[in-house]
Image (cartoon, rainbow, N blue to C red; front, top):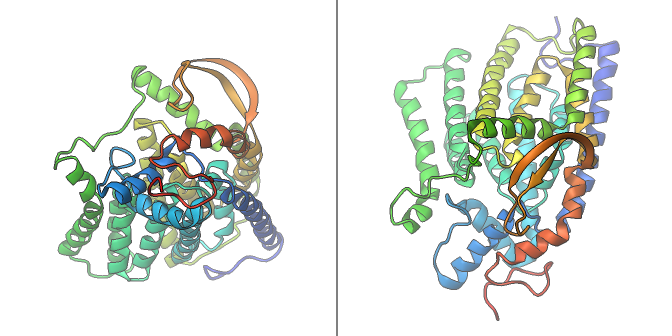
Length: 423
């Protein structure tokens, strides 16, 4: 029998090599787009990029903390604000890129730990998504949270528990939703040690690790709690509830499909047909210990995917909220041999990054574009539309104009350092 990290020879071995080449080509393509985006402004993210920077400007000029959003994301606010004050959008965007690379290598290590050796196809499926490329190259908090979380998870797998817990808590400080992901992960790691590795893990260890994660995250939310007069009004979210639960469900279903794209769905379905045909020839054969690790990781990935899908049902605003679901969903597909599904999904996402199929024609309220958009109806009218990579380029001039209006002090040159006063 082959060991867990060995690859079968013959047609499967050739296929494995071809998949790696394909994945590297996809990642190189995403890198080219990422480099272009990094050098062209802060990005926008519905104005949140500039709100992060405004928090930094107010902090320096008025010596008080005004959160960029209701819950405040102080990790991103400080990281991006400090970088932008030194090197403008380029340095601020490179902060995001740095966390993206940290997450990339940490996740590869996590995959190896759970006997999932082929990480490149997983990374390709993630970065083939246009939203992932944009969020990894602009001034956002999504990849900061994911990078901290992934690094913390990796440290826990190598028994560096103190650092792992601190980074898990810090990821929750970067994005509120990660407190739940962090707690699920800490519990999973301890349970894995107890049931699979046969280590003694006492109940007090569970309590200590879980409470420590909450404590670290809580420290990062102290500024917004104090700013709110020690009240909890800041613990809220802007949900599109105007059309009731059916409206929420419709938004959730449509935006979820559009996140992976119609091309992505079609590609995954086509891949499933091929997987059904070639499923009897697995690429990797592992011993029982390896299979046990993969099975436990499957349960974990499923929990993370389900959590983010339900979270998005609760607040179906930005499709970026589904990025962790895409990532850990790709882990599931790879771990259990749905490799053609992964390839089909990746190809579909690549196409839809440039041009997408939109099944619905959505009408919006006649509002100032800098205020926001509000959908008020939709009709079935399939048509082609710009994908997220192209729309990011098309919308940049308008987004930059709107973003500058959110800053306390506007730079004379958008590519120059972020000012902290009018001087």
